[in-house]
Image 1 (cartoon, rainbow, N blue to C red):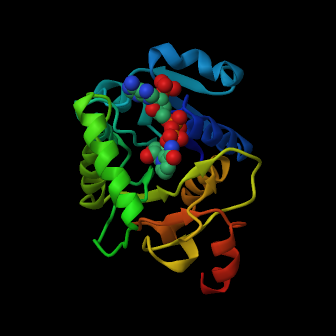
Image 2: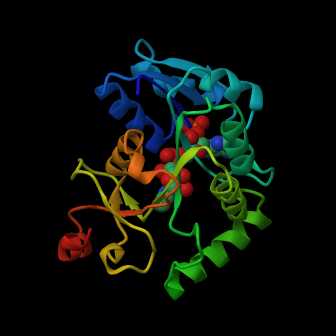
Length: 229
Ligand SMILES: NC(=O)c1ccc[n+]([C@@H]2O[C@H](COP(=O)([O-])OP(=O)(O)OC[C@H]3O[C@@H](n4cnc5c(N)ncnc54)[C@H](OP(=O)(O)O)[C@@H]3O)[C@@H](O)[C@H]2O)c1
């Protein structure tokens, strides 16, 4: 892994991924909206920034060229297929052998075997409805985006984040194939460690074609069930 592209580099998760990638001496290309370029000012001498919306196919084509890995923050902003447009552009233009890592939440399911709490189901229903009525977010579009990824034969991994918090790193999160597995019960990960999992997945071929659901390695459920991983 020499050169990686981070799509959504100016966000909270994106900036942590930029730092982890630089810590590993990767050459970094970051994509973010024009108006957010300044959020990356502290990295501007060390990374290449390609300004633009992440579903702009020309922007993505230029940014992923020659990259061994692509880290994509999938976010379902608006009601114009932002997530699925982003995923499709990455799948279409990434180098054939590149490792592709996508972020999303626990609500995404690869095989339908995840078990969700009533609270999460209710939250998704209400948040999904409000987001769509206000035309702010389209949670279903993140589902469509991940379905595109799951159907691809590229070397992808979809990392499914739990609830997030800020704070210093606690180490690499633990993971499980299905939400509902006891190890995930604490439902909390430090955002910096979510980013670490994404970046480390670039060099972990065991995660190819998997959708790990992650949780912080120091959370009670992780500590109680660690021996199972
Ligand atoms: N937040 C959670 O609790 C949570 C839980 C589980 C999983 N996740 C997953 O974690 C990932 C990162 O989520 P996050 O909540 O931590 O957010 P984040 O990293 O801050 O990312 C938000 C991204 O959305 C972009 N953005 C914001 N408003 C936009 C708009 N109107 N149009 C287009 N782009 C816009 C931001 O770009 P700018 O810098 O240009 O604004 C940034 O790249 C996502 O894949 C999410 O599904 C989040």
